[in-house]
Image 1 (cartoon, rainbow, N blue to C red):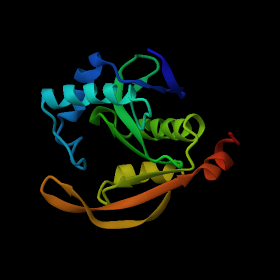
Image 2 (image 1 turned 90 degrees about the vertical axis):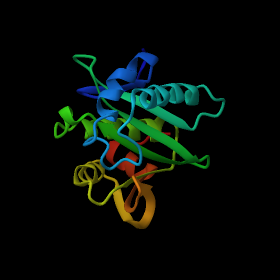
Image 3 (image 1 turned 60 degrees about the horizontal axis):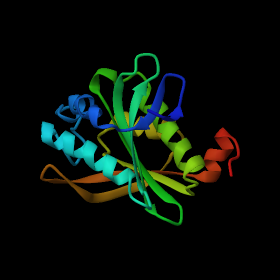
Image 4 (image 1 turned 135 degrees about the vertical axis):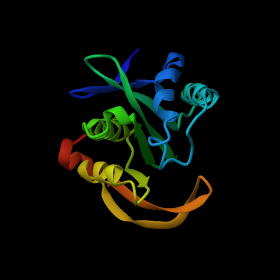
Length: 185
């Protein structure tokens, strides 16, 4: 399978049908899904997610990019990361989930930098945003560590498991990415 972006310890690649079991190992985990609007998943939910991600990459004007996060040395899947183009004028949004066995190891940070690289360099986006539950301290830390700027809080904008929740909004612009990582056309 082709590697789309490669870092020191991880790489991102397209999801394949066989990935459903590895993804299901965290998508079915209550703690891993605590801040997600979905889950914990049944096996059918996880299979459907993988099938939908594969269908989405086959559309003519692709706007959804779902990648597995894979350890370079072992080939083990540690999570998945997604970028959605939400405005064809150059605006995207990212999100990620890591298996709890791999929390606190910097994998989310490395994967998030790889998806930003893909967003700005391969997809030529102007702006990339991310939203996060204000109580999800680990994800807030990742977004700040990768250099995204906190813009504010959307009040009760997302219904999660029967309750309305706030979302912290973060973003990065292409020129901010280029200033930190080099100029790209």
